Length: 212
Image 1 (cartoon, rainbow, N blue to C red):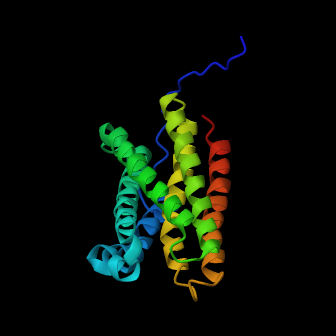
Image 2: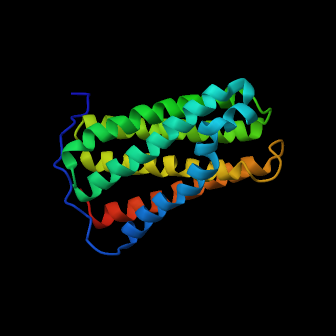
């Protein structure tokens, strides 16, 4: 038998403990950190800012802003449901919303990076690789979920959500200096690779402490 045998797993026990724990602090800090981008980027884009600053691709910017916001909201909800098992019967539907909105967001980001409307290939490469990393992590999480390999599903979707969250800081990085320079590109690279590396260390430590 050359093929690998895939066996389903029971859902891991709930790791959430009531009170002010480090995961709880990180979770709520991540949610609060999205508010500046909502105020500085999403609302202005929906209020006409996209047309003023991105006239030739404003519809793509609006679509990216809408799906990005929906991805963040559904992602945080799905993560909270999986973490606490609260309203867990809606976890799958919320997760499907997260994946669908995020796929749209990522492919729009890839299109904008390829078309390079601002003539800034350095930032384009940085956002394109972030989009590809998100697509890989999310696809792996979806596949592991369909195989009922829940611990692996959890870890891949946490990676995916960390990358979703880094879009927040990547938007802020684009305000570093002139958009024609390389400062925004370096900021984007740092803002998604750094959190992903920290998350990976935390996931590996968690997996060793609580093996599936």
